[in-house]
Amino acid sequence: MRKIKLKRSNMRIYKIIFLAFCFIFSTLHSYATQSEIPQEITYTTYLLNKHKLFIANSAKGIFFAGIQGKDSQNCLLDEEIPLKNGSLKCGIYSFKVHNGKIEETHNLLIQTSFSLKAQEAIYEYPNYPDNKISILFQCSTDSKIQKLLEQMYEKNFSCGSGKELFYEKAKASMQEYIKNANTDKKEAQELLKYSPLEDNVMDTLVYFDDELLVFERSSYLYTGGAHGMPTKQGIILSKSQGLIPIDKNINLNNHQLKTLLWKKYREYLKRLPKETPPPQTYINFEDFKVSDSILLDYDGVIFLYQPYEILPYSYGIIRLKIPLIALKNFEDFKNSVFEYLLKH
Image (cartoon, rainbow, N blue to C red; front, side, top):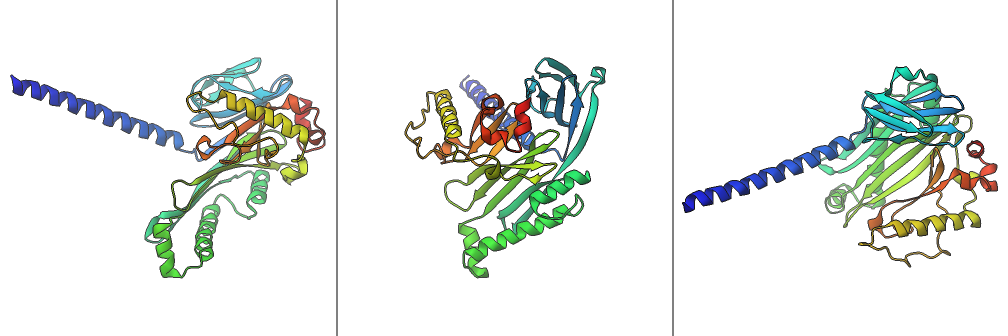
């Protein structure tokens, strides 16, 4: 009888272990799936009555969308991103989505369309695979878009030649890292053994309209220690002017803008979970700065703050969003490349 009970007890333990394993495997598989980046995404501009609809999608579904016109805003995806099947809500409009595309029954007119292809170049130091530099870059078969990308990367390349070119760039970066450490080849191996280098850069288009393309550059640098350093930067390209310097279009010393961002920062602190209250005195108003790293949304401007800038590392990268309507009184924006956004 006792043996039977022991067997049943063991069976329960094995069952629990098995279920736990399945859960972990499922979680890891889910994470890996969500982390996959589609190789090619299409960016389409549709004509509506008094609006324009911008959609980024691939065979996997819709990644983001927004409308421009009266009451410009982001579209709401009612299921997980990318939206494969379901409803896309854009202000007063609602569209049925099937297999990642808006159903043809909506009879939307296409104004323009282009695609970007994501490719990754990885250089691993010989015999030290943990030491690597990876670059995920974008290319396009659309000649006008490709010229803009060449300005962004400061290189002439194509979708066919890009991978080799960026591989050489990654290799040169590794050699520069070793050179700056003032080491010979033998010392370099010791350096990489005890102070490994992992440098990942990934560019993703997160906004587009008739005039601008906005890329988010996500980076992660690890050179040993407890953790690496993640950062995010915004890169803005104008179809008519090329690469847009932020400091030439926004006065980073504008006191009114600083005050508005400070207010958003204080509101952000209040929304954080009470279980992990942030340090209220981490930064004061005098030391607070207007970030020079920005992204655009269809209804606002997002200012990015890196770890340690306005909160400790554990809080990650902070996004403070200013609605477009709140920027209409700023002379900076009225006289900048962003002026047309304020007219909608």
